[in-house]
Length: 271
Image (cartoon, rainbow, N blue to C red; front, side):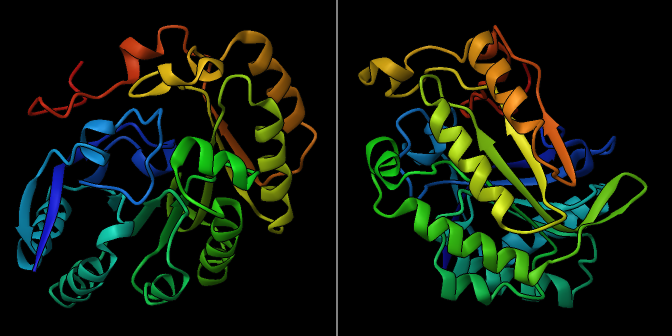
């Protein structure tokens, strides 16, 4: 059984309680069950750049990242590979994997397979993209995104109901992300409302680094970065909620130059 990986190594681009100073042991899987027309990682999600590995090789990668003092094992875009990942995590833990495992997902998961991750995953990092199903169909080419992702996030919270942070580094829990899209402020507000409804002790990560890439030019309304008016409106809106913690980024005027990785390079994040 093979699994395709685009890149792995220490990565510092996550939330501070995930990356810390030592870095997150990040594994970027190739392929995706969504087809986001604005995906900044389209080289790997849509074009499937990467190399095939066996499950045993994936286990070795996890253990090597642990030896390199990474704070966690961060599985990025794992959904389509979940069966192999379950086998790899089970074996890796039997061989001494002790650092937290992060499931870094678009939240459009299979609920029954997600349940099999109980006791294997310590931290869930879902990106809740759309508060309206029709936007999931329009921009990511999937049906019922909002309904499916809500059910999956509630399962993640059920598995890890308590956010445990030790020395400013997360050990267990859930962080829910959302990326602001231009001309879609009502979507972001709806997502915030839904995330707030998930319960108390929610850690919310608001991402502002959107820039038009991949096929975004086919959709005029999202073919530009988020502007300052949109940013300020959302920051004012989120301030009215009592989330346990909110991570947010300053508005990146040069996001295209700063944040787009290039997976054709040995180090995609070496800008």
